[in-house]
Image 1 (cartoon, helix red, strand yellow):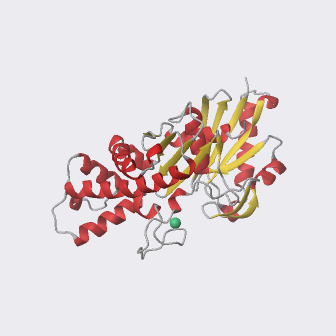
Image 2 (cartoon, rainbow, N blue to C red):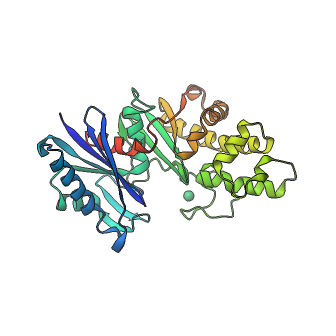
Image 3 (spheres, helix red, strand yellow):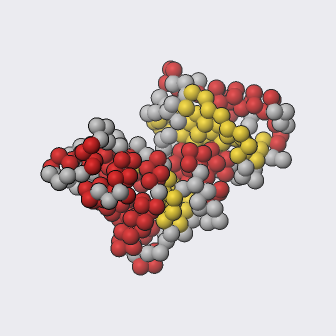
Length: 310
Ligand SMILES: [Zn+2]
């Protein structure tokens, strides 16, 4: 049997998965992300963990096809990361650095891009080659997979759907520094910000007013129960997202759109509302592109990291 390691490097934890190359996740672990000294020990700790695992499981190293790494920031084609705020990294060639400490083949990708690849391989996009994935969490990530390959682009910004400009009159800056990015309206934090604005200006009664600490989940839950204001918020969010997806589809025309991330736990309300508005906005040939929920949850990145190796 041949094996691969999928490593999803997050700002607080590193998820490491041991996979068979057939696509089975055999075992997974989590280790804390050591951000000491601008994250300089992160790669060494990953390499040591993997070496230890190979040894303790009596795996022949020649049966390991490599290590795929997912990083929370833009990664260019050669594995170069110019800046990764969450890990403290600055201008580092991750593939080259990993080669210095491990003799296993390595491939590095952006976390949202590899998640899209993972969903294509063993998740909601299984059986497809052209997949557009959007991850709705604290921020909004995205990944475009065409002909089974991630489109990462020359600057590693391919698939950065969250930072598509969608509004002109936004006064609050986005995390990226621009104003009016998609992420500011449709992420978990985005919908809460929009909800607070609406509840402040609006006198209508709403069960959303009962929450001391309003979260995206509450808005979707109350919408399902029929709250009018919550439904308005879900509609406006899904409308903005659907328009952005329609624009992307006019460029890449994927076979399927996968919605993942914490917000996607809202379930069918999300995909059905997005689909409704998508049909209004999309070019006629793309109107029936299926919009589905992701399947692999937090493991998608690890799956995609392994898939990126072959
Ligand atoms: Zn932005």
